[in-house]
Length: 144
Image (cartoon, rainbow, N blue to C red):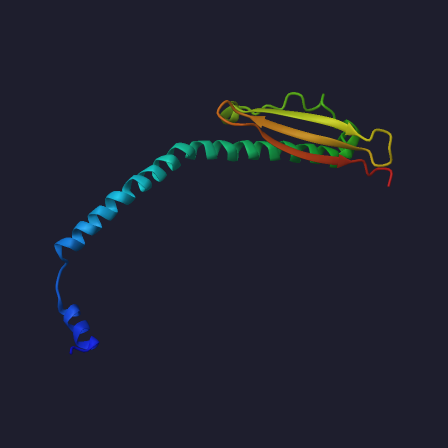
């Protein structure tokens, strides 16, 4: 009866791979390859779309920051009262980003009530994407 340690030593001394092991590796590679190629292809196709979504998100956040800065800049003639659809009707980016369309919708909520605020909806669209929508609100704290 052979003990397990002598069998292990014999296996460690064997050089190379058998033909059966090579065939199994080739079959496994052939099975895995279409999935790997499909994943790579999908990633390469969707990569530009991910970049466009990132740019659209950046443009929406930029516009929201501009509106919030206008609200805070009451000394420059802006402030809560100046935030309306007329001020932000033409906010489309230019240059490299000119393919994007950016719109702002300002809605007065609870008009005349103690908790009146303006709801802001910034929408950025592109011909290759679903619209990116960013929503926020500004409150009038001047009477506090």
